[in-house]
Length: 174
Figure 1 (spheres, rainbow, N blue to C red):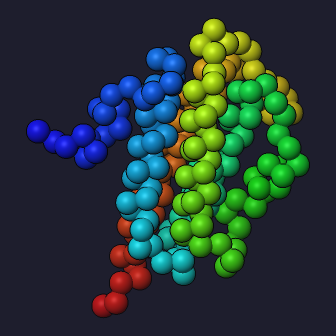
Figure 2 (cartoon, one colour):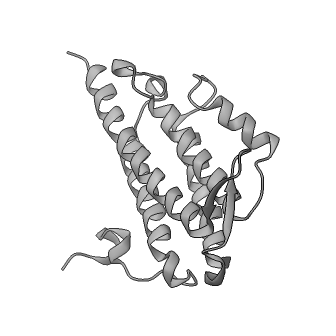
Figure 3 (cartoon, one colour):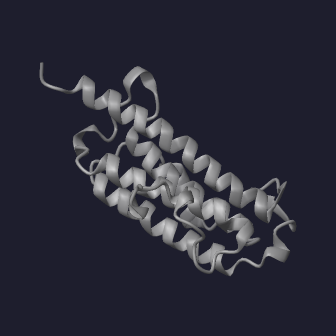
């Protein structure tokens, strides 16, 4: 039998206080956090902004993971983005030597914690309520935004992990 902590998050059972319909969102975010931490523990800061074959850098994905969670959960609350959120969006992917791998992973970790708090306090009866996205107020719902946040997170995590592997292989001593 596999020890509970070694199982994927969705196989560890329900998360306390997370509404049943939002369990998959919470599981996906926690799984992403676990994998990100494990895969980037020793990733060198000097490779954060490398873009092999012009793909998005590991640094971009780390910023984007945090930013998308922040933005989609903001929309799910029925709020508009703040100037600080718009500024963070504009900075995503721009090389910044003051940022570190551990610092960006920590920011994602904190954003997941905030997302989990919001999931725990989301009333399931609101899940189908309309939520406008962006300045154009494109149509979505609370659950649509929360599920998209989880899906988008896992998609970018996969891209980040592939980029990490390529960048590290390209920079290995011969």
